[in-house]
Length: 400
Image (cartoon, rainbow, N blue to C red; front, top):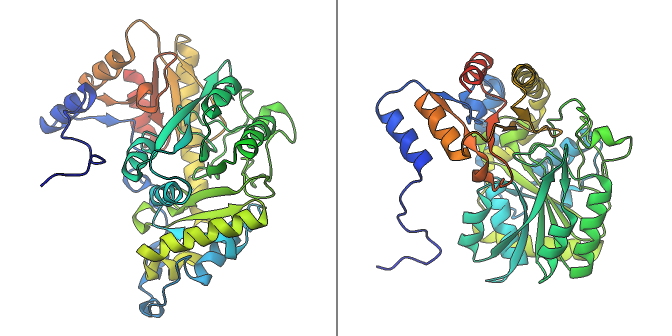
């Protein structure tokens, strides 16, 4: 038997993974500052009644719709309406999560070998999904100069040979930054010129931080492009000059990664949007991957966010305060603050290499991600989760 070339070989784990696996196998007590699963840090979403909603007997009837049930799509549109964002239930398609949303969009927009643009730093998961779908990725830089900003020259270079789609992450992971209105307009003009679609990953769009002076919100009223959520983070959902796909899901909106439901909301010129929706429906109809029970329960699940999100925001605020106090005591460390999200990049002294930092921390009982996991290449960075339990977060910072 020969496996597809799209399947990675049995590669040896890197030094970070080897050391971490060894410490865990030895039973070492570890403070994991990379933990971003809300169900493992005391922040699982939903009460007992909400989590029982998928068991409603009414969900036993199977009436497949490639876009997802009308009831569920109306619930997603209602979620956006609650943020002051326009959304048409007819222009929403359900998926099992953001990873499947990306896979669908790579299939929809790209032929084998075609290129998509991704921000750097950003998610490591882009690479394996693109490889599996047979498309290529080309990075453009999000740079730091006292605040995060789009490197316009880098984006123009990335567009030089064309691209089928440009991915933006609002707010970015791990920088926590959002493109401002001028940056979005610049990117959108390039997309329009090259016939490129926009893909906006907004899974952390409900989790804004207070303005810090190094953020979109600090640049003045109206700085954010397009419609703005009730919590102040920009969204690309609304009037757009190119077809635009906005991604989100229950994992981050409601703290329910186990429910496996995400969505794609479409914006842009009507004809292009309709054609894109037709293609997405065809792809989704081949798989019909979203279960009926979770679709039926979606109105109740989304409603639960009102009780859950304040708990997460409180946790993030507490841990950001601890991080700020720690860096105030040790100015050789610097938080590279963005505007929102669940993680923070921490610049560490260049007295040792980035990999040496994370390996030594594991030896001392603390797990953090190195910046190069996210293609952050300029200075040594650690990336830490802001939803870790506060006492463990504080203990981990003490070791750092």
